[in-house]
Length: 106
Image (cartoon, rainbow, N blue to C red):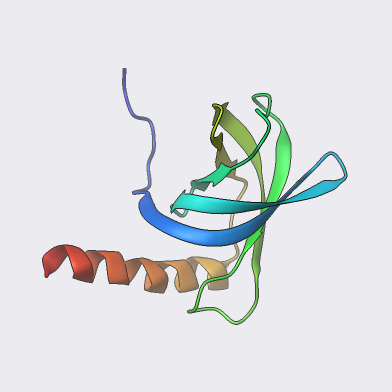
């Protein structure tokens, strides 16, 4: 089985909000990359479900809110593939991810 991810996922613990079907749910992002994330969710979401994920990182004043689709799910949550981030969000996330690189080198 091949791993088709083109971005490195970083382990995180970020409070987030997941919106789908006219509802908003509090959740936690447990891994994050420029291409997507894994979010905890109490109900198994069907593959292809359109969602919006909103979260904050210290390196960016505004919340990051991005649309995406469920690419896989289990009883713990869902893997979300982002539609695309704005340039400022990519910059802020890359700055956020630097801490993981530095920690790995220490």
